[in-house]
Length: 239
Figure 1 (tube, rainbow, N blue to C red):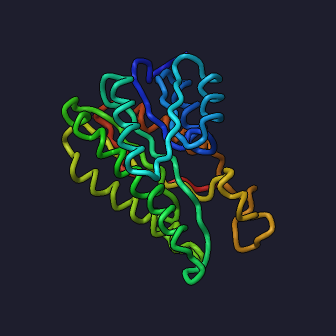
Figure 2: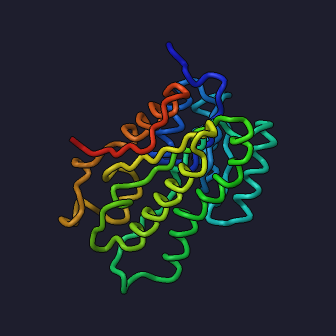
């Protein structure tokens, strides 16, 4: 079996479920040593055990700036370097009208969906530049370009993430560091559970959604391209 990521390391956020978990599994299957990051310690430990000695669990609340800093230090000590691959898959999915959006919801979504990937990228970017290699893969959304009713907060966070990605691309061009934005349409994960799409005709049905493994396969494809191939953006839809 081909293992094109053998000898490479990958840090995957949001790894306890959904796209993050599927991505961790896909990268491990390709031979990567995977560092699993999410809030839930128990699911991370279970996934690390399932993936074997090539995986390790690193519980962290990425919405907290000091926790992100400690995580970056821990990862650098563990690896002795920056990870070869950084996948930003953690996120929240708030829905609601503008005038029904609470301050707590605003703070939580922007902290996890925008500030966390920016801080984590910042923590490893210098080392990646010095090394002359690194993949930063950000999971965006169809909502990073399109606007939907009830989607002001989530859409704002994903538009912001796209802006960070495009700025990162401009600042790393020619350095060997590759930045990729993968923007899937609605994907069937537990993030939808709170919104009960099966009971809301305004939302896509789960049967119409992509699967988390579809997005994970896209991540694995991106990071296994030859070094001279740079995938700037990949948009996924259900056919």
